[in-house]
Image 1 (cartoon, helix red, strand yellow):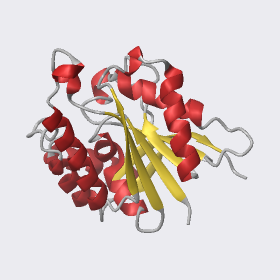
Image 2 (cartoon, rainbow, N blue to C red; image 1 turned 135 degrees about the vertical axis):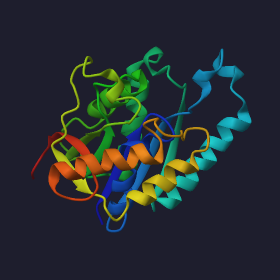
Image 3 (tube, rainbow, N blue to C red; image 1 turned 90 degrees about the vertical axis):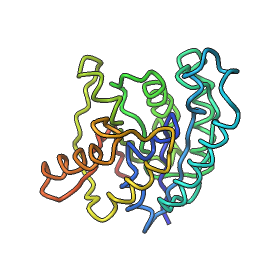
Length: 227
């Protein structure tokens, strides 16, 4: 059975970016999720000020979401929230390389580089570096996803803008995504916030209308190697 690796920066990014797609693909393939950052600590004056109970709850919610989406596993990198740009890029790359070696995925889904959130941009760079197509690299496809409340808030003034060219029909799994997002009690927001159930359905409905289905998630194909 082929496997897929989803590499994201924060707890909830996996849901916002490709939650419905994870739930759909997990029916036939092993989908493994990597969450590089700890989440929420940037909301406090310093990383050490973040309550350990809140960080633990967020990790527990991420594990519950992984089960809900039927992911094969979820892994945590515990990098400092919204401070990835303070780390040597090599440190992030090494983490991703280790997980690629463990999972041996044929495809990787990750953040789009033209994103308001710096952690998302660093994650993309680390994934692209860790999956460079050397002899023996199992990764044949790399896809970038949008994250509502981050990608669109760059207002296409950060390069490159998100230009999706791959769409996944998620009509049967959109409600699983909504339920998964609501599991993140500290991250879900009421309408009209982009993370609200209403907005997430509207985004999927919009992409679905582009390709003739009821609901879709959109991705930009970064690289495809046909062997």
